[in-house]
Image (cartoon, rainbow, N blue to C red; front, top):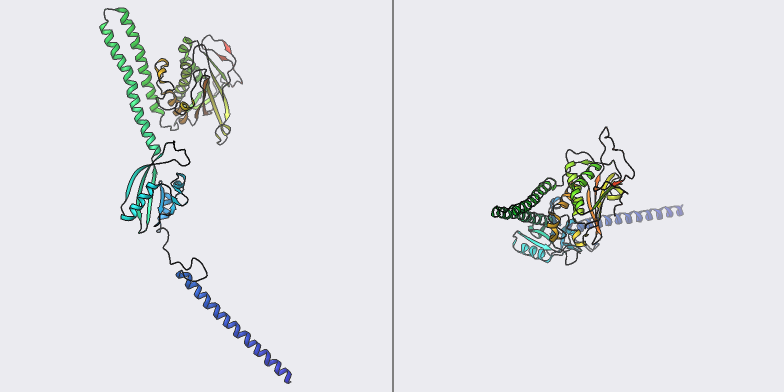
Length: 435
């Protein structure tokens, strides 16, 4: 019995010890958790390297981040030490922020001045293009700097480059129109005076009258091209398109250039796939294709050849877009060709590859600009391949249209029709377009 009593007493003492130990451990754990929560709330404690820092305000005032995300302008928020607290993706794309810091010293100076006196500043600057060579044209930007709270500075940057370019184009257009109109009008004025002075000389009167007719034709052509350009320059898609047969457009373009081609003994050959249709404005499409063929004739030497080729291609292969069908019309000449630096500008208004030849060729410098805008308004593109001294190929790609129902007679598709010369009607093999 004594042994049993001693064993029971020992077990009771051991259980009491375990209970006391558990109670002490539980109380110690509660105190540590309370202390840790207090330290986390006040920024103190030794468990974290950041916990010893004093409490900080939110990086941006409430709602500012949301507002900056919907702004069209580039937004940059700078802290007290000029560090970038927040920057939009456009700011990085324009190269304004690099490595977490403002990369444009002029903007940084404006931000520091605004932080000192709290005054809102707005200036226009030119900044280098991101990743471009030093010789590249800089970006024109408008910068507005304003204080954001007591310690932050907000920098808003708007890209004005495209707006400046459009304004320059408009100024050049007005200046060029004035110059181009002044030339034939001045010539008509002088010729009319010459006719009046030579009233007793029938031969001189006839000669001057012929010159007046040439200048009047040039003036009428210029005015008509200005009107055509004003109708298509917005690049807006057409509201009421109609089916337009490509064969008729080509025939009209050839007929338009028949006389100048015959005078220079230039052979115009048309070939490719027949029976194709476009969906658009017949007048605009005829003007665009006529301008391409007319340019090919005007800038080609005598006794050469101009080829017009048509084919159907996949838009996925040509443009990388959703699969669809495009009609490709190529106009190839054996003319003077276009240099690489001129190829970037030939679709600008009044731009000519060789201004000295403008009077001899009769060009106004608006034809290719009209072609570009007509292609854009019809959802297509125009491109050029050229080598100086070897000739050029202008290629227009437009969405394919459907033939009207019922189909017109003779509109069946042919695999490889014969090309016909506008000079003597001689059948020719279908031409192959250059790449």
